[in-house]
Length: 170
Length: 64
Image (tube, rainbow over all chains, first blue to last red; front, side, top):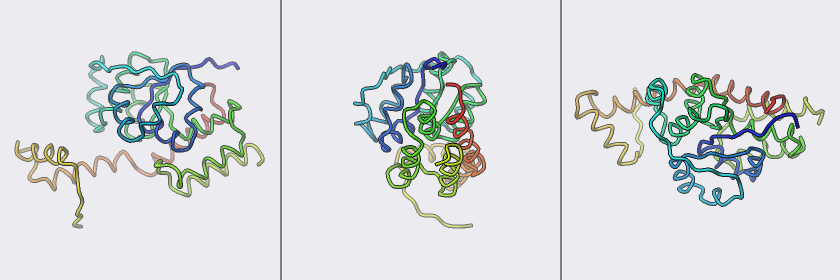
C-alpha cells in the first residue's frame, strides 16, 4: 500500500457506531487509536464491550488547549467534554485524523485545519483498503437503521448505496 | 409558540437555572430555546449531507 498507517483520535460516536455494526475491526487499519479519558468514560457508560476489542487503543488525558481559539470555538459550539478533549489532543497530534459523527465537532475540527471523517467514511474506506467487498459494505450501510444509533436520513442512505453500486457496478 | 414537555438531567437543569439566577436569562425557557437554536444552526440538513458526501468521496478515493 502506498498510504502509511495514520494515528486517529476518536470521539465516542464512531467507536459506538462501528461496534454496533460489527465493524470496529476496521480501525485495526490505523496505527494507534487515541482516546481521551473522557471519551473512554462515555464509552464505558454506553457501550463498555467496545473497549474490550483487540485494538491499538491509547488513552491520553487532555491538558489545557494550547490555542485559545480552540477553547473559544469549543465553548461557542457547545461541544461536550469528549469532543473538546479529543480536539485538544488533536492539537498535539496534528498529523492524526479525527473521527467524529458530531456535526458541531466536525465544524470546529475543520476550522482548526484538522483532517476529520466519520463512521460512514471508515465503512466505505474498507472497500478501498480491501477489507470488505462492495456487497459487504452495502449490507452494512443497509443495516444502519436497524443495528445502529447513527442517525442518517433514509434518502441519504439510499444515495450512499447508489454511489457504491455505481462505483463498483454492483 | 409551541409548548414542549420534556425531561432533562438534573445537572443540566441546574446549570440552566444558574444562568437564570445570575441574571443572564429571563427564565429557563429562554435558556433552552437559545440552546436549541444554536444546536439547529450547526445541525442543518445540508451541512450533515455535505459531511456524509465528503466521507463517501474520501472512503472511495482518499489516500489514507
